[in-house]
Length: 432
Image (cartoon, rainbow, N blue to C red; front, side):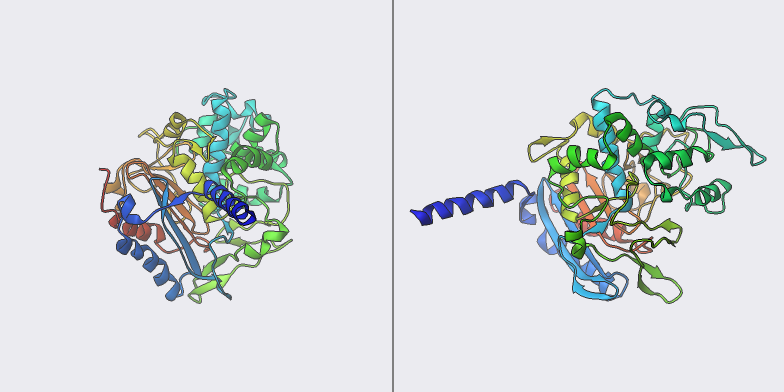
């Protein structure tokens, strides 16, 4: 009798574990080829064997089932230990879609309209300026709106995209990322001119960090707490945070950059008090602090990020938890840029929003024409990537989610293109 009870208990535990995770399937049952999917792993292995990457993790989900989950290589350039499936990655700008989802939860609750001025929630950002032809700061003339910060058309910048531009120089001198919290950060940002009139152009920027502050102000909760309670806990994302807990530091991967002079992978120095840049991108302390960057501050695992993506693929719900309405997700993942707008700069590698055939939604890049992008895929794909080479995309036509994670700052390699080719050639039953 005791054995039967023990077996029932084990079965119950197994069922709970399975309920907390995305199911798996053979590729063939989901219309994909196992043999052809091996080419995805071959791509990662090739980069590692050539010394271009220390390691990579790739994951593919079709129809809500994991059909590919592979790990290749080591933890870092100077760390021979094998990469593990639950290792922690800096996802940088893959934070942005999460921030956009948080904002759209509040939109669904009627907390703001798309054309509301941001200054309604962040008064520090009222009466912003821009540079005139003489380089003098003059009134921008218009208020930045919620729609503009969600679409990167507000006129903010970053500092590293065009470091010779006078506005970007001012961003770098302002030391935004040394602020104690988002309020102090906004006070520093308010003193800087916009790149252009609000709504005039698409320009990649700190707008997602502004969005995070709006979430904080509307909800009355610290931004990290809002994400934890409204997205991470409901989705079971136990390994996603702004600061890595001490008991998980052994899983936190070293970061690397490609030393162009010596043509090799090199680890980046990190730790408390270490402040530096890699090709213009500021490094952050992931062990403590109170400045929660909605544009690039999160650490996560590939499985946690797949939970987030599966929620999007599944119309806003995962594990019985409703995060957004399917109509809201469709609204977010349509192109919101009118043809009159020009994309003045690319995004973080390996994606570039200035590429032909690509538009931008609310927190996501959107494929408008796969022919013009010159890569395999479907019209309506939505995606983004991070400064250390992480990338994801969701294909609603093929019911597909693809994620690749590496840690290589400003990666010069075409991992996303290679992943797209290898993924789509593995489909043997297309929905088109």
